[in-house]
Structure formats: structure tokens, C-alpha cells
Image (tube, rainbow, N blue to C red; front, side, top):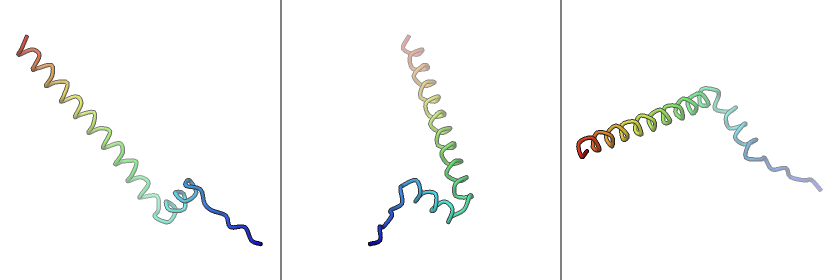
Length: 58
């Protein structure tokens, strides 16, 4: 009787990344950093508008 071995999610991800190459990993990291930066800019803009609106009402 042969026992089938299933890959864990981490192993599947590793082999998937190995197949696609390191460029895709770098792309994902850069995309994540870019999205994080956009979120910070969005929050900064929102805070600036709130502060401005409070000053106008004040």
C-alpha cells in the first residue's frame, strides 16, 4: 500500500514560486509595499482634510 503525501500550503507556495522565479516574489513584495504607501498617503490626506474642515468650522 502506497501512502500518498499531500503538500502543505507552504510547500505548494514554495514550488509555485520556484516555478515562476524570483521576479514574481519581488513583484509581490514591491506591490505590497506600494499599496501600504498608498494607504498611508490616503490616511494622511484624509487627516489633512478633517483638520482643515475643523479649522473652518472652529
